[in-house]
Length: 239
Image (cartoon, rainbow, N blue to C red; front, side, top):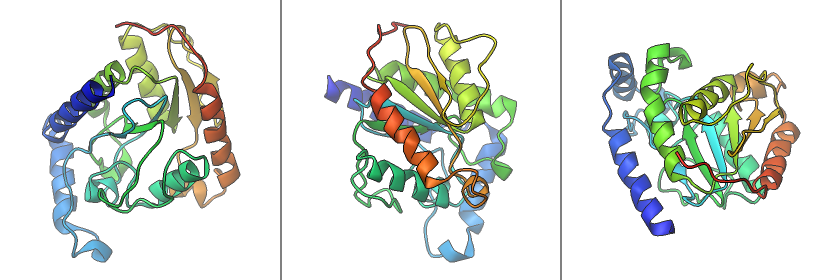
């Protein structure tokens, strides 16, 4: 089962990387890749949509907001090369879900165990704020990934944007999501009938980590709980 899924995910990644659906995002990601940040001036930026990656048989799916302009938009891998990624992969390593605590480049040897990492939007948006139209245009990729990642039992949404978009995509796939929507909060769990549990976490952005809104202990608790929820069986939903 693993090889066909891996092959389909690779083909999907190729489609994502070639996407030019949103003119504003295409222009922005290219401009950032051209002008660069001074500390990365000698690097070649990725400057394209960023594909998801991880274990194709993962029971834990992580959904962030979008690539960072000088993080994944530079490196070409989700949560790689920025402070948010530093927090994420350190925590996953402590939880036994990643083989190393740092992620600086696509070829740095990072391997995820039982985890797959993606985002609601695949291109770096100006001011980290996608428009409604850009969000909706990108929903097709998350929809397709959910159709392939048949082992997922828990979805960890990093931040409210990813949480709301995940509920929207699950509803579009025919799953009965709670209505009215359960309010986002760190550690909030949202069970989905015949589907995965959504586990909410504050995003490991500097805005949250520098202010103490998100601590390492708080973040570690998410991954401990995710591992427990990953063992929870449910009747697989067939789209």
